[in-house]
Image 1 (cartoon, rainbow, N blue to C red):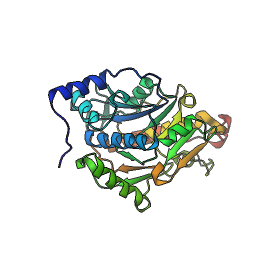
Image 2: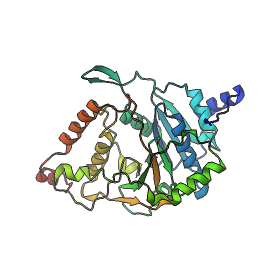
Image 3: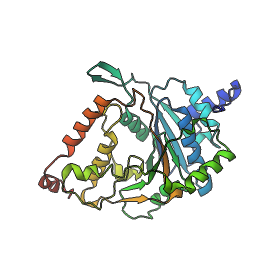
Image 4: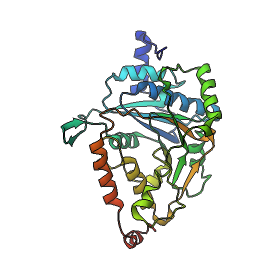
Amino acid sequence: MGLQVPCALPQLLKSFLLLTNPPQPRTPPIHSIIIPHRNRLKRLVFCIWSIERSARICGITNYEIIVSDQHSDMGIASISAALNYVVADASRIRVLRDTDPRPVAETPKGTIEVFSKPKALNRGIEASHGDVLSFLDVDAIVGPQWMEGGDHLSKGWWGDTTRLCYRVRYLDMDMGDWVPGVRTGKAVDELFERYGEYPRAHEGYASPEINATGCGDPDLTFGNSQFTIRRKTLGSLRCDERFKASGYEDLTFIADIWQRAGRDYKGIIRTKAEHAMFHIRNLREPDWYNAHLSDVNRKLYTEKLDRPCRELEDLNVL
């Protein structure tokens, strides 16, 4: 059974108007959740459904969800209608449509159009209002108490923490045909009850920041590309838009944050199922992933971090 989306014209128009021109919140949101997107509407619906469900369970209302869409084939009205179907308050969600030309990259087979996650993330950051920012992949399904993390970070529960990270476990099943609702909620609860049985994603991606230098602290916690950070900690730092398609752009973002913090870097990771998340295995569409571009990205990443220990010491990193 496919995803059921209301398609009556009045509802569609209402959804479009609410999500493209939402009413201004009475108070600025504390927590901004940024999700890059292109052509993964079914996964996006479930990601946002899981966020909304967690917010209800935790009793949290002061947040916003920003979908940074990059040239999806479906129109913004279709995206808006689908999202309005799974949220209680559409004013909390904004869909940003990239009006710039599609990003392109050179490969041995010629110029191709690509998905630029760094650009999508940066647009989301600039449009956000929260004091705390979370970055989620569209393939994420968050645990029932995941929303507590951003709330606790905003209240200073973990002191001078630089990045709040989350354990991620892989799901090989595609939930795209599941219809959000009570029955789905029970099925998701069962998945989280068996959370420890699923394969764990890399944390620190096998500690690449450490391995790249050969002289890092093995106790540093880097987690993965889905994390929460205070806006004042992130400052003016943005994701490096030289990285094209998928691969190493998130590692560089993590490493840049680490180097900015220097000796003061502190990462913590939430590992309990209810605080963590699942990640549906990636679909490697051509415009999301290209083996040649991934190798180019890897070289950019290693050139940036492959420095002698004494040079990093001069930067106050070690």
